[in-house]
Image (cartoon, rainbow, N blue to C red; front, side, top):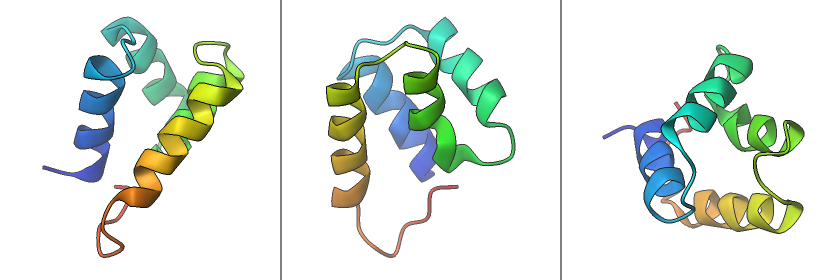
Length: 68
């Protein structure tokens, strides 16, 4: 499973975001999937605290994994 797929699963299951909100942010992030959390925050779909939580979660992933 790619990091992006794991991130989307985390956003749905742990953060409670809707598939629609995530899909919109994925479209906005375009070819840069590592911008997905920023797009969610930028469009007001998550708070700054939630953004930090997501970034902490991403940081906790193994360093050998990419954000693609």
